[in-house]
Length: 165
Image (cartoon, rainbow, N blue to C red; front, top):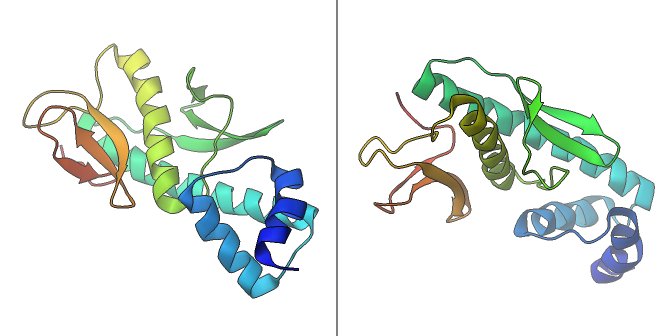
């Protein structure tokens, strides 16, 4: 079986419509090293990969929170009926579309950063994080395949996990 056939006949029925560069970057080496694994095996392996990516992303974002606010937060993946969701101190974002979708480290960091930002903005009643130069809110984005905090005013950016106080 060729990789495209496997994706159509096995992966798509098992996982549904998945997209993004990160999924392609994850599926290709899986197929190359293990071949056309079964649907249940794809589900098990992808769930474990997403869990690991979410945990690593949570550590990066929690470090940004600590350095910029002095607050210690727990950013954790929470297993649900339809996959993972991301919680900040047990609170889920109201804007997470009901799930966590990333599997790659950088995409996961961007997604987690956005979700934690939603929770903290509601909690703090203020924008977080702020650009130290412009005092405008930063937003999580992917730039050159890296998760970054992007200044909306100055168009400069800092890696997610790299904010300073």
